[in-house]
Image (cartoon, rainbow over all chains, first blue to last red; front, top):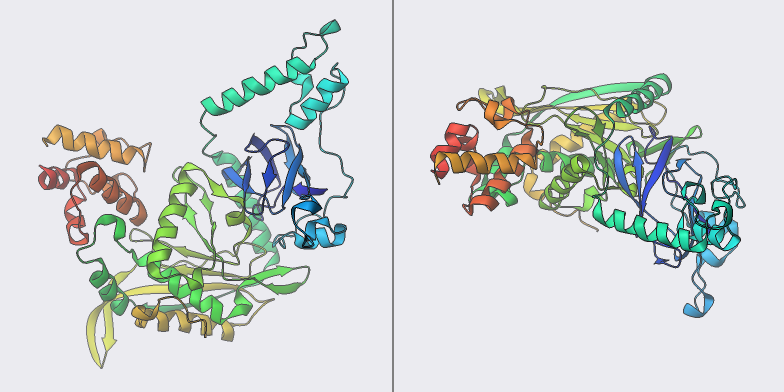
Length: 404
Length: 77
């Protein structure tokens, strides 16, 4: 039996509330399956599980759970299913090592025997009804019992489950976020960043001429859905630069730097109505500009309408923000803890520039780095900015990174 | 398509991108990106939506002509 815990969906999250289960007791799950919709200040998040087995118990809907509290219990797959040893059948140390490392300083893992946060047993209910309610994640205290002295019976629980399933099918999943709550969460995370992280800042002006010409050539005669925006190139260049300077790609946790496993770039997305999320684009350094463009469009859409996945919120190893064509000319970011770097791109502007001893109009972009002095120094940060510049001078080479 | 149809199409597409946007309050010659606070990605999605709704392939070089309501009416009319 393994516990599936409330994941840390970023440094600014404390609690989450399950608003929908997409599995029931008995459901077979494998790592990566979306099992629940959890409501946070970032809106409704699709939560993926990283255990393999059969769902045994679920936390009741509507319960506010802290990070690390038990969401569900999972029975590991039966030994008969596969002769090969499964990590989840080993004792608990191995089990916890099978969980993905959490980048956030999450509370220490919940004790293995920690009970599901089931409601108090004040409600009168038959043992069978109580057991069934536990299985279904229903609070018997919320039901109107039809049994002796108003006790909740098995039939009451089944009826409630059926009507809940019906309601879940009828009502669209919750979307959107609470603007006030999000503002408070951003404030808390950024206060922590400014309090704890000794930021240093670097900036360069990069000639965007080659990149703009390349974009124009690849976009020519394309339909709107195939267009590449400058953002795709900026992201590609930043991701490759982060791969080349691994000391800027990872987390400062427990007094030490821990490099990220892969370059999972958090892409800052402004939400209409205020607020900000920076979900991960996984392995961004290995994706082509076209693949990154598709990922960006998908991510922006889901950030605004709901449906971000838990791994996208917990995995970013560094953040990139691009202000876009209507943004300011430069940005000096605030690092999202426990990350150690934030790359910023201002708006591309046409300005006089010297090329071969001549002053010519060129599209330029200001690139900045905010980095954690506990993890690196300005020399390394300068290398990252230089690598971004170099990539943008040869955009045709921003194909998949060579594995050689 | 007449002007009414084109405006209705633009409003339908925008509803999926900027639900709170009120196209009726936007002047014919106002830049939609500024009037409705659309960023580059929003505007691209607007183009994609218009392309799907109209069946007309919108090329990159056409996009600047579609930044105003008047431009949309001239382009699709």
